[in-house]
Structure formats: C-alpha cells, structure tokens
Amino acid sequence: MHAQVQALALVVVVAFVYALARRVGALPPLLLVLVGLVASFVPGVPEYSLDPSVVLTLFLPPLLYAAAIQTSLPGFRANLRPIGLLAVGCVLFTTAVVAVVAHAAVPGLPWAAAFALGAIVAPPDAVAATAVARKAGLPRRVVTILEGESLVNDATALTALRVAAGAVTAATSWPHAVLELVVSAVGGAVVGLLTATFVTWLRRRTTDTVLDSTVSLLTPFAAYAAAESWASGVLAVVVAGLLLGHRSPLLQSPQSRLQQASLWRMIEFLLQGVLFALLGLQLAPVLRGLDEDAGVAVRASVLVALAVVLTRPLWVFPGTYLPRLVPRIARTEPPVPWQSPVVISWAGMRGAVSLAAALSLDEHFPHRRLVIVITFVVIGTTLLLQGSTLPLVIRRSGLQPADPTQDVLAEAAVKQRAARAAEAELDLAVGETDLPHGVEDRLRAGARHRALAAWERLGGGPGGSGQGDAPTERPSDAFKRVRRRMLDAERRVLVTARDEGHIDEEVMRAILRDLDLEEAMLSRDEGE
Image (tube, rainbow, N blue to C red; front, side):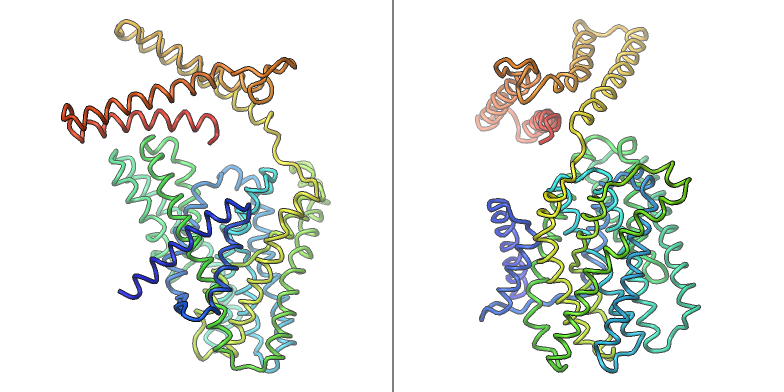
C-alpha cells in the first residue's frame, strides 16, 4: 500500500508541475528535474528508486513508439543521411571521445569501462530535444532531423554499451563486437518490419476501436521483447512505429485514429513526467553511494560533461558541410544555413535513458558508482545548461520556422484536388442509385466548403480581409462559432431527455459521441 501511495503522489506532483510550467512558460522536463533535485534532499520525502529494467522495458518502448508513429516516414527517408550521421556517427564519436577523457581523468579505469561510460552518455534524450524544438517553432527539416536522431540513437548507444560491458569481462572480442553491432541493427529492423506486417494483418481484420487500441498499446512491447534478447529492441520499436504511423490513414478507421491519438498523448504525458521527476529524485541516493575520492569524481564529471557538450558541434559542423563538397550530394540536397547546425549542436540534452543505462551496470563493474555520478552530472549539466538556453539560442540565431503561408497554399491545393475526387465519386454514386431528396446537395456543398476553407485563410490576418479594412469574421469562423452553440444546445436536450427518462443512457452516449466527433473536427480545422 505504501508503494501505491508513493506512485500516486509522484503522478500528482507531475501533473501539478506540468500545470505550473505551462502557467509560467517554462519547459516541463526542466522544471520536473529541478523539483526532483530539490525534493531529493528534503527530509521525509520517500526515496524513489529508478529501476533500470523498468525504464528500458516499460518506459522506453511506448515513448519511442509514440514518437515514431507521429514522425513522417517520407521526411525520415529524405533526411536519412543527416539522421544517420547524428544517430550513429555522432553517438560513436562521442563514445570514443568520452572514453579517452574518462580514461585519462580516472586512475585505473579500464578502457572497456571508459567506452561503456561513453556509450551511456552519448545519446541525446528523445523527449527534451523535441519538446524544445516543437515549442520554439523550428523549421520542419530541423525538427525532423532531431526527431529522427532521437528515435535511432538509443539503439546505437545501448548496443555499444552491451558490447563494451561484455569487453570488461573479456566476454567478447572487438571483431565479434563489430559483428554483434551489425547483427543487432539488422535484426532489430527485421523484427520491426515483421511486427508492422503482423499488426497490419490484424487491423485489416478488425473494425473494433477498443481492440485496435489494445493492439496499438501492445505493439511496442511485443516488438521490443521479440528483438531485445538477440537484436536491438529499440530499433524494432522504431521501425514498427514508423511503418504503422505511415500506413494509419488508410489502415485504421477514423474512430480508431482519434481514440489512439488521445491514448498516446496521455501515455506520453504520464511516462515522460514520471521519468523526469524520478531523474531529479536520484541525486541524493547517488551521492550517498559514492565511494570514490571526491576530487576525482568532481574532476572526471566536469571533464566528461565538457567533452559531451563540445563533441557534438565538433561532429555536426563537418558532418553538415563536408558531404556537400561531393557534387552529387550538393545537387540533391538543399543548402543549409549556418543557424541549423548551431541549433542542432546545442540540442544535445541527455535524459533518463542514460541514467537507466548506468544503473543497469553489474555491481562488479569497475568504478560503477563513479560512472553513475558522472552520468548524473552530464544529464544535469546538459538539461539545465542546454535545455534552458536552447530557446534563446534559437531566437538569437534568427532561424525561421516554416512559412505558414506556404503551408496554407499546399493545404488549399491538396484540399481542392481531394474535393474534386470526392465530387467525382459522388457523381458515380448518383449515377448508380437515386439518393433521397437533398442528400446530393448537402454532400456537394460540404465538399466545396472544405475545398474553399483553406483558400479563405489566405485572405489576410485573423479575421482580416487582406485589404486593409476593418477586421471581419470569415464565413468559416462564423460557421464554427454558431455550430458550436448549436452542438451545445443539442447536448443539453440530450442530457435533459436522459434525466427525465425519455431515452436510455446508452442511446444518449451514442448520439453524444457523434456530436463530439463533429466538434473535434471543427477544432482540428482550426489547428487547436
């Protein structure tokens, strides 16, 4: 019962801090870590334990899957080279640099243990970087690269850690380690592909939204469990999520997509919040367990944190511009303004996966406690230094987000093509059978309204006509405003009929669901 109370208290604190962060304009992950740091030294606060196996098997798969199903597969493919350079090249480069620094800073630290430390602190956190990137309004290509990197870099780092930890006990040779790295990557991708294929087969045979949501919830755990014992479970989850997210518009029913969008938003909110809070709460227990000389710990932590921060720009800038000296790459890829590598270089916050990886080390691992302390210092330094200043770096760099006018133009053009296809299908339906009076007119008017709504948004500023006159309410805005009032009136009638016994609760809920779906679509059109 005591553990249940602690878990409930943790979730309540997460919800409160998230609400506070939104109110003061702070980043929730950073505020949660700070609150956890302070709380870890407060007498009477229970000692929460961050179980590495729980993080890597219970938290990581759904968080990666939730990010993957929202990531554009065409965008991922188009930026595969920069994503690969960051998620594989930069992670391995950081691993090597940190290994050299740690080996020099800690007397008696074996090379294999130093490489293990490098692998632990090498991958930037998926949650922190993309949360900042989305809030700051970065160009879409930069956000895609950061999201793509965050999906794959954990697989590279955890595989490198497994290899380095095996080398500590002489359980593996370096040639065997390279082979294991390749097998892990290929095997993880194959398991992800097979998982996506099986889930696609299941979804084509069910229309039940609850069953579909259950399948969606189980998918990341199934992919991870099927691969983790011999390949990269992380990569399996990412590949499955990318493929299923890409197929979702034609594979799932609208009800399933709406339900699962809400489901995964809630899961992300809870898991991310709890992870960052637990991250801060680990400081006091970690320091109490340190049995190394304090001077060695401080020196090594500072040097490794400095190496982690500086290594990323040392890799990103050459990785951005040197390949463009190749004529084929220069012709096929757009030029990159200097602001993009600046922002990407500074988006290197580490998070809970690094700490979980450090805590997962065997008790007999050389200098285990010191490795954990160094990892914690690196996480705290990057989160508080880079995470808190990244919005400022983005603003000072002058990096512009995607042009909203171009987005609206593209949206309007594709909506017009979609409306023409819809009207052509309507013509076929009318030719095949007689529709009841008024149905054809309503369907045709609806298709034309959707086609014209995006063009209407180009008319000027909010509510403006685009001709300098006084702001006026656009027809589509007026339609949504009045339709919401009408929907509220319909709901009141439904509730009254239910309360007076004229309709059953089940009947009311079925009608209410249709009204809610219509209002959700009104909000979706406004980008809410």
